[in-house]
Length: 317
Image 1 (cartoon, one colour):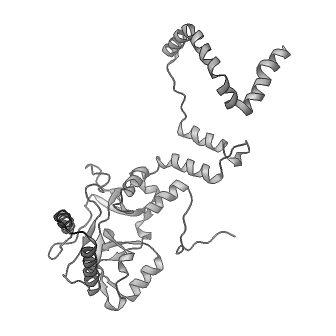
Image 2 (tube, one colour):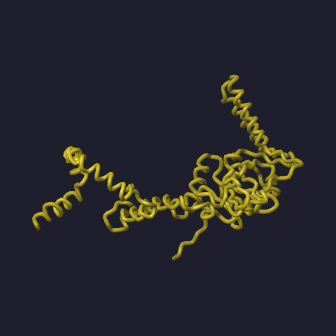
Image 3 (tube, helix red, strand yellow):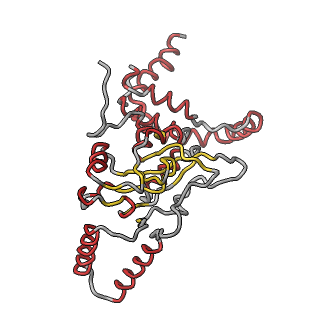
């Protein structure tokens, strides 16, 4: 009995535990021969068992996968090679499908936004610089009515002494997503390049079905909100130089000319000419509750906070 135990169980397990792949690859021809020999008996028995007990695919659930990944981590002490960061990211990727925009958003009360009727004077420019954001939401009348966003890099040509109104600079459309939208869907929309920032809204009227995301219907493009028709001289000179530079670098030809005309036409169709018309507002059945960015989604994936140069945080001593 001891001979059978050592020769057929203990010794093979000890050897195959370390050299399992090598031994398995070496005996593949023998196993294939045994499969064909046992096929006439094993196949009918397997079909009978599937009929009686049901067919079960040997797949792991999400919770089982997370436990399996933790067991393969070096912190588990079982010989695994996965580092703490690797196990954390894998677990975050598995949990991301269960999280929605509400779990990762920044509350609207904690969001830094500027009024469209304000002026880019020294105080406001200093405040934008202090916040350190690359994109700043723009609201109209009340902070919950966010109608667009500005890119801070577009303010490089603006002088604080000119006190240029916010409504006279380039404003981009900002997409809206429901608070129940999964983070993977938001990440896929962010990857399309329309915008890396969106407004999270909740439906006040549950009887009407609203689209979960309007990124496809309202693509984020350059939008010009020009109420008074004024244009700062900085943007005039910048666009003039840009057009001259394009004229020098682009090859002459009818095809290039048609493409430029089409691009100009599409751009003009996205410009908001608001002279007598009111500025856009959120529908009555929707209420803005927060802002979500690409960084928020990545933080949920990493399961860690991402701090940049302008973030102020204090570690517990």
